Length: 137
Figure 1 (tube, rainbow, N blue to C red):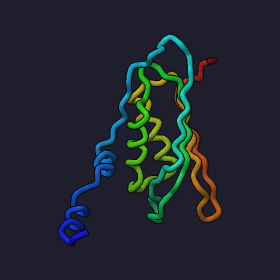
Figure 2 (figure 1 turned 120 degrees about the horizontal axis):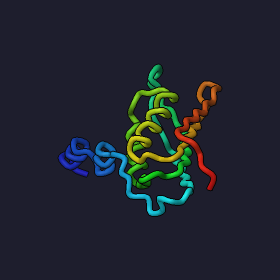
Figure 3 (figure 1 turned 90 degrees about the vertical axis):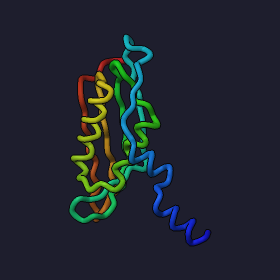
């Protein structure tokens, strides 16, 4: 790669970086609004930064929810979650913020997020946040 091409590539955000920067939670109408059902989504490559050390934190996010009027679009949640990769934020805050944003966007009947962070310094953290009342399916 020539020097000019290399310089241009580093100055211009890559398409994936642009998509993450522009990420927003997109929802669509629930195709079965009168039926109780659950959607499970696992996001195994979540990252953010520790607000105290600056070290990266890695987690598996497990989301289970019962849709209300809207269902979250999968690519949108992937990009939204990836937007945390360079943010300094605690395990507890990021877990609650994700739930707050999902509730605001989709208004689920019930939602639970489990953020299972990789051990660091011999400490393993799992944060569970829920919203609403789970209905029988």
